[in-house]
Amino acid sequence: MTSDIIQLVPRLIPGRWIGVLCGVCVLLLFLHVGAGPAAAQGTAINMSMNGEQAVHGDEIVVLEDPNANITISAETRIDLIELRVNGDTYRSYSPNSTNFDRSLPLELDPNDNTVEIIAKADGVTTLQTAVTKYTAAPSVRYTSPFSTTVSGGPNSTINVTSGQITLAGDLHTLLDVKRIRIERTTNYGPDNSNSTTDRRFHRISNPGESFSQDLLLANGKNEIVAEYTDSQGRTNTDRFTLIVDDKTDPVIEFDVVNETYTDTVRISGTVQDQTKLKRVEINRTSNNGSQVLMLSGNAKPNPDRLSYEFDTTVELYNDNDDNVFQITAEDTAGNIRNRTLSITYDPEPEIQITDATTDVDTETVRVTGKISEAEISRVTVETVNSATGDRLDIVRVYDAGGFTDEVSLDQKLTASRQGTIVNVLVVYRSGQYSTSITAEVPDTNESIETNNTAPSGNVSSVQSSESANTTQDTTEDSSSNKTTNESDSSGEKEKQTDKESASPTLLPIRTREAFGGIVIVGGVYLFGHWV
Image (cartoon, rainbow, N blue to C red; front, side, top):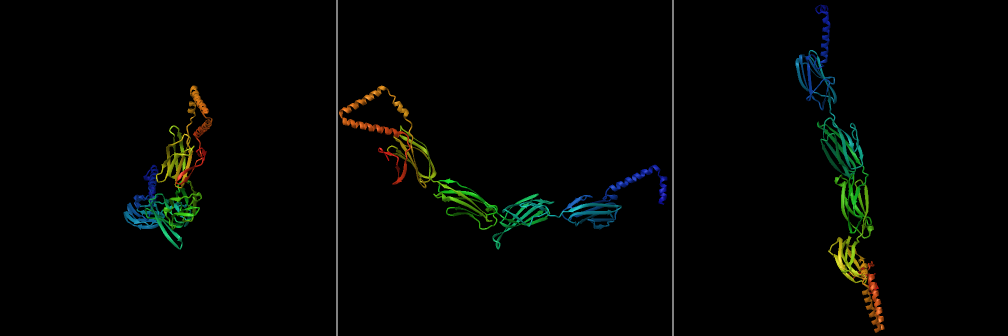
């Protein structure tokens, strides 16, 4: 019969239409194939996992076993439905209906999975998708105080050289890391058989793509447990031991004067260490006298013992060899640092006289200056006639009953036309100190020359008067004339001596205590003699 139909076709359909029909058939066949496996013969397959729509040939990522919601509709009765996971038949249904709707949980393997839905109605339709089940917890690439790769975790034991470290790393995870928990446990002295446990916890919330946490360790072993948890509760835990091998000495910085006039001095500074300070002290090297500033009884980690500030006072002795000190700092690992300092003790005051000029008209001298660099309790200024040694004036400048470190001078005292010596006497904490200067006298040569230019007539009359008197004295008594000449000669010598004394001269004046007062010794012209 089929052959009869084939033979009948050329009779019913003209030859020119046969080619057209063949082309249409080919086109319909192409459109049917290109419609895709999920839409053949009017059959539609839809599947979603945890709210995400599956697309044929695409990929879905899940973090746990999902629920698959499947709906199928067809124009004709659906004879068979199969759900396959990784090639194995997971579920099979014969609905005998044009519609199918089902929700069921899928049990997937970790990582890559292939899920297929096959429906047969008037033809076979397939929906296939890749499902990745991500079950790994967050992983860490450590960057401090050691380095690792993402896939390789830290070694079980790691040596570090400082008790102050920073545990840091980059986080690698599909989901956000919600929290990090780091636990540090150490057993510290006095020995392994009798030790005490110290435990510290650190928590970081929502760290982002990386984290950084400072840890304080004890010398020796420190157990670390680090937990990284993502938003789905998956946790990655790393366990390792950090061994501190501290070989670095503490660092000492201090501030102190090199020279002082007081018998005590302040020494201040800072001591720092990378693990923990055990002892800080100051020793006087001449007698091993020790002043302990800080002492810690154990090696327990303590952030307050990473740095220590000190401010103390030490006494000074007159012998500067006794004023050498050593600052010593020791940490719990046994590292010791020493710093030596020496202080010069010079209690004598410094006397600066800026002016000591005599006013010949008023026979006074003004003394200005300053006394400093000592613990001063009393200052006295006096003037002495340089020709006779007589004390002309005395002023108590300072006597307040306490100590001061500076006294200003601005005093006017009695002076002598013959010459004046100014003595400054200072009583300070450690004793007495004095100095002497010769007051300056303004140059009077100009006034003398002016007097010598008197008219010649006056000079002659003066000379005549003197000659007459001399003749009269001579005729009256030759013996008295001899005496008069000797007296005149002595007078001229005295006048010459007065003129010489009027010029500024620095005389060697020394002072000493005698019967509670000050006695001038040596270098004074007294009653016609130098004593």
